[in-house]
Amino acid sequence: GDDRRGGRCHHATATTLTSPHRFNPPALEQLWLNDNPLLEELPSEIEFCKQLRVLDLRRTALSKLPREMGRLKKLIEIDLRETPFAAATGVGATDTDGLVESIARKDRRENHRLEMLEKVVNGVYREVADTREGQYLIPELVQAVCDEFTDLDELRNVVRNCDRLFPTELRQARNPRRAAKRLHDDFTALRRQNEKKKLSAELELKLRAIYYDVIEPESVEGIIKGIYQGDWAVEKELELEDIHFLIKNAPRLFPDDPETITGPGIRSAVWALQQSLTDDREEVIAKVKLAIMSNLYPDREPADVEAVARAVGKLFERDAFATKKELEEMKKLAADASLHFPAEFQLAQENPQAVRMSFKRASAASAAMGM
Image (tube, rainbow, N blue to C red; front, side, top):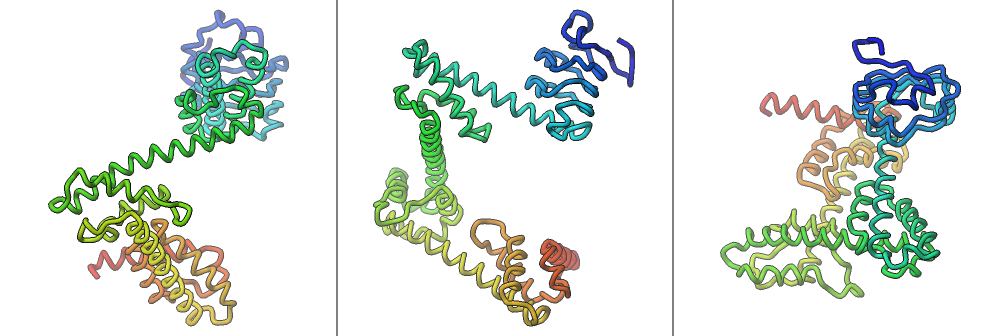
């Protein structure tokens, strides 16, 4: 090849592309395949061009790209103008990173599908894999499971836990989509169970810190078990988010005397504190609404003014429930509303972020002055 743009280059035809011995793929940095009207697809071996940075595919007959292209980590420029692929997708010569990442996701998804298929064929369905039903139904089930999981990390975890998640009897999967949905539900339950185990360890450390000199370490496990277990027919169960909340607010939720701890009592304390923080958030939003309605927008509909107050308040939120910092800032915003909200109501509706930025700038200035 010649030396263009300081890198090893190759200007190929459809014929030379399929004859890799004609050039050196591992060293190739720039590849021009443009103006090859007979080039309808790229070979999967394109992945061996590890140093490839520039790929010109203009005016070819390409309608799709091989998933192996997603493995080209150094590719920074793909030109697909005047190709069927560009016409179908709208991708021409822009957003190479986005295109490569999209192809890489498809590649990872297909790799997960193939690995999953291999694992169930050689594992849970080993005895029926060669039967007529197995040859038809197993690939259908695997594809349905891949379609059910849009998140690649979750799909990877499904592959790792195939033997635990797939139905033991293939006849239970004769409706692949329904079986995949049940598998998804089982996966969610398993993940929740594993997460609860991790949170149990965190909660145990928190309790030992709170009651380090007044509680026997072996009794902590029983306390946590009592918090996690209850009669869910008459009481709401703690979700993962609630357990995170419990750990974060443990000093406020657990009584001084560990002998008085009960599962129902702690759960009730969680609900009560969450409701209190929700009420506190509503109260400061009401204060902001009253301030801007009285001083800035008296002629506007109360519901519209409240919507603006809520949109701005949302930008001050740091957690699912009100934090001390959030409440302090919202109270100060209500007191200084005329300094931060625009005089024109429409501007406040269109850009609540500007209100928050004005508040932050004023807070930073006050801090700098030592106020």
